[in-house]
Image 1: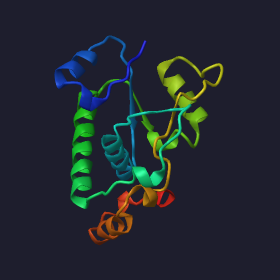
Image 2: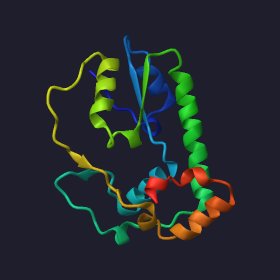
Image 3: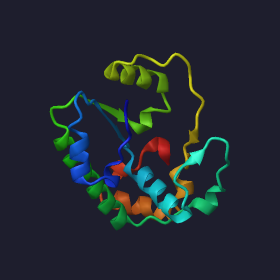
Image 4: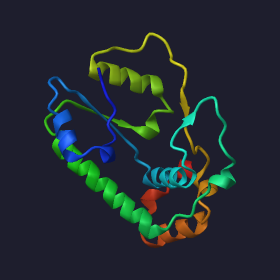
Length: 168
C-alpha cells in the first residue's frame, strides 16, 4: 500500500505521524527546474486547472501565458529549498528513493525499474495508459509573457541556473 503526500498540503504533525508507519519506504519526486515549476503553478492558479486528463485538450498557449517577476521567483525558490531541507531532515535515516521529475519522460521504463527495485515490487507487467498529460509542455518563452525581460534579469543577477537550455 502507498500514498501520495504533497508536503504543503499536510501539517508537520500529520507528516510526522505518517512517517511513523512501520516499514515505510519514502519516494521523493522533486522538480529540478524551479522556473518551469513556478510557471506551472502560476498558470494553474490563474486558470484554476490543476491536472490535464489525457482525453482533453489544452487551451492555446497564448491564453495560458503568465508574467513572472524575478523577486517572486527567487522567493519561491527559497521557500522550496527550505521545504525540501526540512523534509530531508524528517526522513533522515529512512529508506528513501529520489526521483527527478524531468527524467521521467526521457526514460520512464528505467525510472520504473529503479522504483520497483526500491519498493520490492518489480517492474510492472504491462504499460498502463496515461491518465494525465503534462499541462504546459511548451517552451518557457511561450509560457512566460515577459520571457525576454525575465531572462535578462536572471542573467544580470547571476541566476542562470533557472534557464535550462532544453527548456527555452
